Length: 146
Image 1: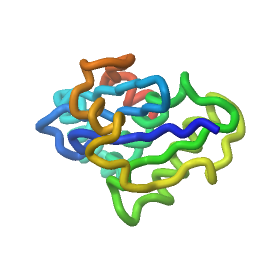
Image 2: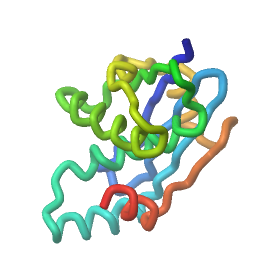
Image 3: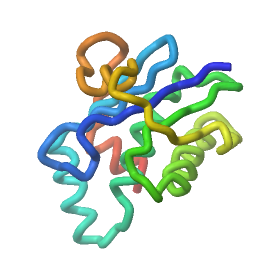
């Protein structure tokens, strides 16, 4: 059974810096969301009073990181970035995956400390060093998360 480890560098709600969400198993993918795109997205969300936008953006970045590598029996272990919000994040990731791949068992998603020495952490801190890099635009985010 494959296990994807997911880590984040630069929290989504920190709009003054880029966010990188990295997923690794044997292969690696880093998803980059530029700070300027987050700033514009959050400014519009503030006007429309959308709640938990940061969780939806985080979940979408996880989805984009694992979507092309995911196999039928793979598990996803997400670094515990948002304590107390695991159920919401799991549900959002499941929804994104199910929309693309059909039914997805949410029990295959868990949360744990990924660790500073894991490949996912190292890649999230240095996205340009190995693996595939996907830059998610403001337009893509707006379309995906509504």
